Image (cartoon, rainbow, N blue to C red; front, side, top):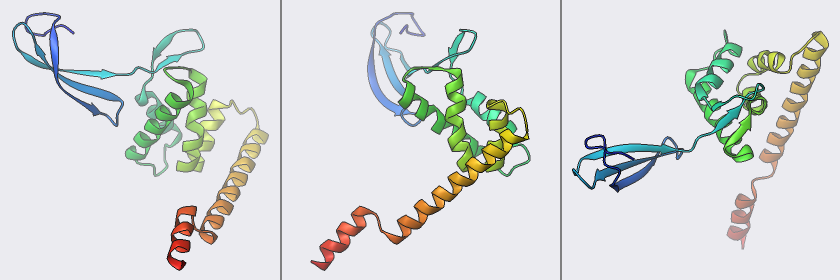
Length: 175
C-alpha cells in the first residue's frame, strides 16, 4: 500500500478492526518514511461469472434492484431488502466460496424472498424460472402452499415440544 503523502510503500499497521458485519477490515496505517497516518479498507471479493463468461464483482445493489422490481406495490421496506441482499451474499459465500455462477444468485434469492413476501416471490420466480403458461404459476403456487403447510407443522411441533436446551433445564430443575 502506497502512502498517499509520499508514495512510500513502507507502512506499519497501527490499528485493525472488522467492519460491515465482518466482511471488511479497516486498518489504520502509519508511513515509515513521513509518519503520515492513513486508513485502508480490505475486503474479500465475491466474483460473479455471467453466462457470456464475463466476470464481475458481486453487487448487493443489483440484488436489491431486482428484488425491488418484484416487490413493486408490496409493503416491503428498504431495510428488509438490504437484509435479504446481505443474507443472499452470506449464503453464496458459504456455499460457493469466492466465485459463483450468476444463475446461482437467483437461486439464492428465491428462499429468502419466499419468506419475505409470497407475491414478490411469485413475480421473481416467474421471470427467473421463465414461466411460459398458467400451469407454471399453478405449480409454483402449489409448491408455496406445501411449503407453508410444512412450516406450519414445524411451528406447531416446536410449540408442543420445547427445544432440547429447555427440556434439559426442566429436567435439571425437577431432579
